[in-house]
Amino acid sequence: MREPRSPAPPRLSRLVPKEEPLECALMRSPRELPRHYRTSSLDRGQRNYYLKNLPDAASIASGDTLIPDTEPEVIEELWEHIREGLERSMSPKESRIPTKSFVDRKKREPEGEQDNKSKTRSGAPSETSLLHSTQIGDPSTDITPASSAKIRKASPYDKDFREQILIPRGIIIVERRNISVWNHFQTKEPDQDRISFYKDKGSKHTDIWLTADDSFLKGVAHEYICMVDGNMCEAEFATYAKETLFRRDKRMLTRQFGDFRAWKTDRMLELVAKPNERSFNCWESPPVIESDHSLKKYDFDIRPDCAYWLSLRAFNADYVSKVRQWAFVIKRRITCPYLFIEFKKDEKDPSSAENRVAAAASLALYNRFNLRIARTEQAGRSLDQINVENIRVYGITFQGASFVVWCIQPNLRQTACEWAGCTMTSVHHGDCDDPYDVKELTDWINEIHRWGLSVHGPNCENDIKICVSKGFGTKVSEFDERL
Image (cartoon, rainbow, N blue to C red; front, top):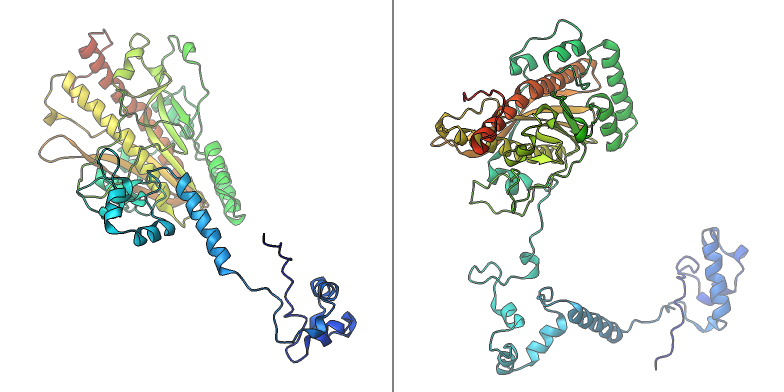
């Protein structure tokens, strides 16, 4: 049995000068040592250690070392034991990478014996034989090394997310110059108080509208300047924006809806809305349309920082239970989202926020497109007559005080009215530390909500009415069959 080793002594490099013998340095008191040898308690501890444990230090030559030699054989034996333990504990699927001991044993065994051991009792080759016979990238077999067999799920933070996930699905991100919000929506700038104007034109039952008073604009710009100068975290930027710019309506229980019908929004934070391909729930992931790309696995489980959905309280209670047959509904409350917001602390990597908005928006837009296809088929019309002018959603990305407004619209194949991806185009850039840019942002937010409640919502309701009426024979109020 090997005797226990004594602890390794501290280094003497700071106590013993090269030109002075070791025995002389150890016999001197701390006060007699040069200043650069007694600058810390560690130096005194080193000297006391050697005086206590090495009484015959004078017999040690000045060039000798006090650190014991390593034992390579013991170290190699220890590593061999660790390798064998890992090899035994790993499952067959995880143990495809050969250890050093495995390779050494294979080298020592004759070829015939290797072939015999590489077969199981049933005559099929074992996994070790497949490991040596299979080449990485060989399409003739499904057995691959563990590093390539387990494909890691893609993330919007990956540098190749657009090449692996977005582009194969026809999702394109395009940056362009700023355009006027009034030209984009074909509306006129209000000549009165913003809140009063949008309550009349959008919905008087919602409280999400923003004012354009100088005090409000300067106050927002001041807050962003303070957050940027203070180098505050992402949560501070996101919380302030949600409290000030992206407001929410008061919530109502579903059973309290009753006969009250009004177009309202539901602001949802980090909502889990993962597509489920195994059940018919009208919430499918955008399909891959480019097959010549190497794809990673991605399930479109986005959970955007902030999103606005339509409230179901605008639909008639007589057929609201049938809405989920044609559109995605969450907890009998919300459907058909139209605005997605993402926050990041700074502008070092804006692509991650853009990727998240692109994924969330494309998911919503694809299912909105499918609703229009179902409406067209239920109405007995040709798909060549489909109208996608008002089928779009919006997104806003923040990097600190900077923001970008995006419009996401579907692309159709030229030969047929089939989904061919979508284009996410920037329509406005700005900085929230400038009151003028804050005014531009508030106008975009107000107009997006007005469009969502007065155009997007009624269009979705009309499509659902046609599907419910034609598909189930349910009596509904008047609807517009024009495409």
